[in-house]
Image (cartoon, rainbow, N blue to C red):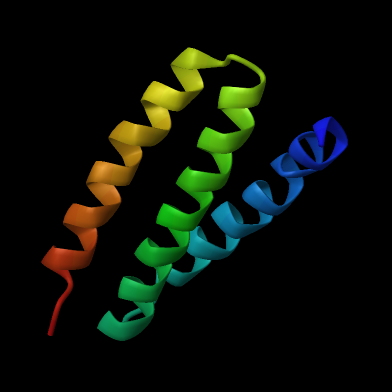
Length: 77
């Protein structure tokens, strides 16, 4: 299980990069999907951070998740 949790940092990083790419779109539906991908990356980072007891990282991800939820509502059609 430890190896799986350690591996999560790589998909978390890739999802974060993909989300950043998507929110740069001019299309609101792609930006909303980008914020959704950011939320997925926040959750992946939280799982990884919990395992490694990285409490500052977890606090950061919770705050960023709140901003990503706000971003979804600000970008609705």
